[in-house]
Structures are given as C-alpha cells and as structure tokens.
Length: 216
Image 1 (tube, rainbow, N blue to C red):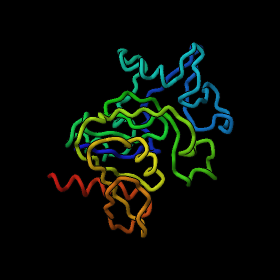
Image 2: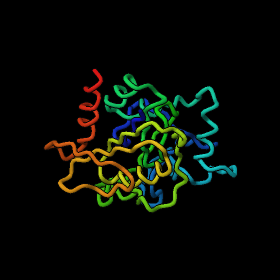
Image 3: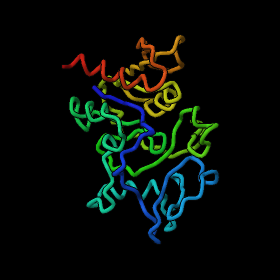
Image 4: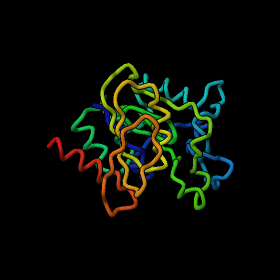
C-alpha cells in the first residue's frame, strides 16, 4: 500500500534552506519576478540554474548524498501538520509520498528545503508568485516505483488531482482518489471514493485521519 498526500502551505519554523555561493538564502516560488523583495533572500524556481550549470533541482538531488549541512528536514517533517508524521508512523517512510507543487512526487524521507509553491487556485489572486499552473513545464520528481503493483491512495484537494494522475500515470497498482466535492472530479484511470464532510478547507487531513483509524 502506497500513501500520497498533497503538500501543505504551513512549513515548520526550523525548516532548512538551500543557499547561493554568496550566502543568500534561496526561497523557491512559482514566479520569482512577482515576489516581494526580501533582504538576504533570493527567489528562484526549482528548475532555475544555480549558477554552475546545474539547476537547483539537480543540486537538491545531489544534496541527498551529503551529511545535510543545511539541516534540511525530511519531506514529512517539513509541513507543520501532524497527519504527515502519523502516516509515516503507521506506514513507514518508504510507503508515504508527498505531492509537492514545487518538487513533484517525493518520498517522505527526501530532504526538502523550504519553499512556497502551490497548485491551489486560491493563491492566484492574493499571492500570484506562489501559484503554479499545472500546465507549466517543471521537471518534477517522481520517486514512486512504477513497477510496483501496490494500490495507491491519494489525499488532496481538487487542484492537486490532475498533477497526481499525471505523475502516477503508468503505475501498475490501482489508484484511489478521495474527494469531497458534490460532483466527482476528473481523475483519469483512478477509482473515486467520496469522503463526506462539511469541511471545505484542508478536508483531506481529516480524510487521512479517518483512513488511519481503519488500521488502529
């Protein structure tokens, strides 16, 4: 069994960051040109070049083999929401994945820097520099073993469903997508399961908690 849950906007205060060679902190956003100026910080997209011919995505992948000098948190520890840790405690780091709007489909133990990128359309008007259109060309990671026939359960809002289906296309296991909207979402190749709740924001957290309760 594989668990996939979307990323969260709330990051832990002790989240680490990547840095430029001139000791400026990198803040990853969807549109650096629209981001407000912040002393000591440089805005970048994950696929922007880091100045040495490599992209920040390439450098983050190479960073996984380091001794973690920038104190990056594991993906499941990055978000200030308890359900991520609960999922890992029950299913293990190798079976829980985060659908990150910045990095793609990453495993729970992947060392991840602080970032502010979202697929949520609510951010488009208020904070346009955070919003990533799913049609934008990112070199997203997909760290799933696509040869596995284990079922994949997805917990995430409607804006994350199509990125999920795109990144998991070609997997052999059944894909189950939970949703709470009145009308079923578009999720090609997936089995849809409605989770009934009056919550409209972050309902997928309670859905994941309900799912966990079936294994207690």
